[in-house]
Amino acid sequence: MYVISLSIEGPKLSIRSEKRYTVAVEESESERELIVQFTAVYEIKRISYTMDIDSAGEVTSLDPELLQLPELSLMALKSSPQIAEELFGQWLSLPETRRLVKSLIDDARAGTPFNALGNSYNVNVGGSNALPSMFPAVSTPPLSPRSSSGSPRMSKQRSSPSSLRSPLKLVTEPVREVIPQFYFQNGRPPSNDLKEQCLSRINDIFNNKPDGLRMHEFKSVTKEICKLPTSLSSAFFRKIDTDCTGIVTRDAFVKYWVDGNMLTMDMATQMFKILKQPDRNYLSKVDFKPILQELLASHPGLEFLQSTPEFQDRYAETVIYRIFYYINKSGNGCLTLRELKRGNLIAALQHADVEEDINKVLRYFSYEHFYVIYCKFWELDTDHDFLIDKENLVRYGNHALTYRIVERIFSQTPRKFTSKIEGKMGYEDFVYFMLSEEDKSSEPSLEYWFKCIDLDGNGVLTPNELQFFYEEQLHRMECLAQEPVLFEDILCQIVDMIAPKSEDYITLQDLKGCKLSGNVFNILFNLNKFVAFESRDPFLIRQEREDPTLTDWDRFAHREYIRLSMEEDGEDASNGSIEVWDESFEAPF
Image 1 (cartoon, rainbow, N blue to C red):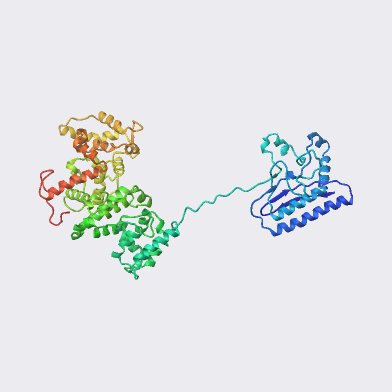
Image 2 (cartoon, rainbow, N blue to C red):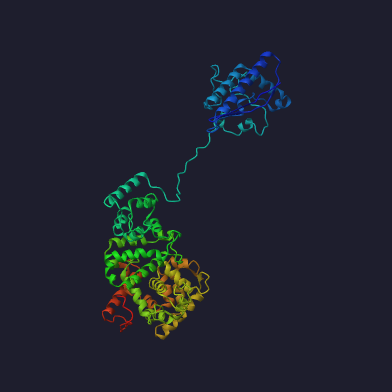
């Protein structure tokens, strides 16, 4: 009685064929010697093979069905199970079987892959191309007895002929796709070509300055090598010159720009990293002061302000407030990299680099825009304490606003005041108010006025809330002997204009999706603009069509600058009087 088990594994292939059978054979010397020899050869090769070779790599399995018996009926196997065992033992005793097993072991040890094509396993054993068998009529080795649920004979009935392959199956591990690294904590390293090109340009500039560059000389590096707006030059210089030596050497610049992987970042990220403080992940208003200082010092369109440093400061403050008004969507005074990328500040800085007339840089930097804002504030601030109260604001735009909307503004519902004085609005608060009032088509403006009208703060505007603000408008029209428009008609007009998803209320998204949304707020609390909208001035309509790129704010600022300039020359173009400036304060122009 003998037990035979076969299991060979290796790094490139694995023969797993484990069958334990009790083989009954005659106690003849030849047969016992055959099995003993087979077992001994197998054990020696298995031990030496598994000890010498690592177990990593592809796996090719020799299916257990290699050792099979002829197909027999299920009834025959149940009645005489010893038949299969006897036949299997006799098959193992054949000389061809021993040579086959030895050949498989040799192939496994040598790492030779198996060829599992067709319905038979072809191995050169003693010049034979087929498995040794005592049953010439059968082309494949017979099946071994097993349960019907796991028998290949049962699955054979459910498989297509093309799916019936040799029991020796080539099993390979799936190819693993290598995903390239896409996140770099300190930025993507530059390619060798890009790095060499940059170093070549750096050498060209620093060769003439072996000791380094001073701040006024660093502008060429900012523009030509880094391709950044020149207004970032001073902030960039100080970022590298951490020891405040007043000089940036070649090695210091290469360490920051090339070795720090700044070379491969987009321009918004580069600007963000240059301006932000080391311990913060956002930009504050103070971080933008170096840009405005550089712009005021070097831009030809702002040279005239160098004799009036107090207005240089006011201009810089106004520009920074405008930047945060449009770009800082969260309104918390902390400008994130995401907000900077979505904004148009970099485009405006690049425009300022190539445009000598600063008034043509309409986004943020136009001096005319600053002049209009500051003069408007100065007109309302009668005591010139740089604070505005309710009575001052009611006079804005020739008393265009209703008392109810002014009350809502001073309740600080749309935006908390920065003045920190009860009942007083500071200059920054006025800038936000004025930009919102004169361009109600912008998103910040729509959000500002939506919060004012939303009395209960539930995120929707109901007919009752609209009527609350329109009542004062209606009363003012009656007092001015104008034909009143009933609220029911106004409500129908608003619904037709906005086309909200629900006729019962209006959401902020409804307003943002309509180009005429600003007119809704004018109808509710700005009488002058409501009347202008009803009259449909053809001159204004033609202006809008001639240059659709201009915003409502651009057109308003242009008109007001002309009016204020005429007043400055002593001509009354608006209300028949010239503002008398306090002697202790200087006029803004």
